[in-house]
View 1 (cartoon, rainbow, N blue to C red):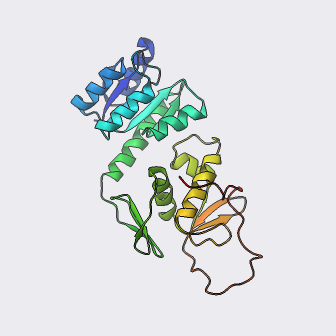
View 2 (view 1 turned 90 degrees about the horizontal axis):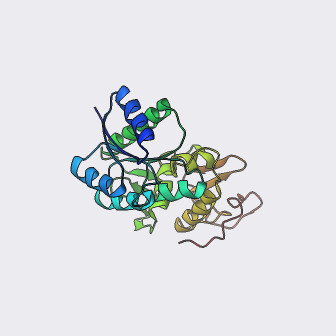
View 3 (view 1 turned 45 degrees about the horizontal axis):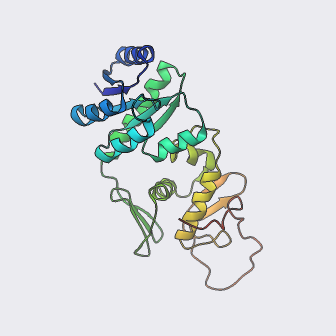
Length: 251
């Protein structure tokens, strides 16, 4: 059975979590401080860590960053902090999912099972994804176009990999926010626009002359290779920039 390390300093909340997890067949252990959680995560090698951000000794964000420095264990943040900035910060620091208190035991169980499924699938070496001259090596986390390696941030690579694996399919920005950023549905998608703009530049294209990222007005984006024209032509059917942010300079 999967072993869940619960990091929660409130005794009543901790007891409720441990009881709910045990009722659903999980082995459990717990820690009430961030430093104890780090020690136990390294020593006991749990299958997943469920962590609150409001810990008495070290802020949960700092614990998460330190944990990511020594372990690849999946992490679900379970906290009362509901601000989007907190969610994005936690996901960018390495959290695999984010739950806002209060939540039901069934939802927690479903989130744990989903994260563990992704972790298990990720442990199998995936085959590279090829779209035209683009190759995305998912195992090595390297992307090349015409044999040239792209200089991508981790988030840009995740975004590119998600889109490349769904080449030919229209993907909404809401889906990207949920699946790439692991943010809840309804979260602001301005960050998606900005990252798509950066990714477009690094792929060597513009919104007016897309080769990979094709905007579908009012819906989202479709990833697919289109041979660049060899001669000039009428630009009247050129695609619109992504939400008007195509001039944002790349990182």
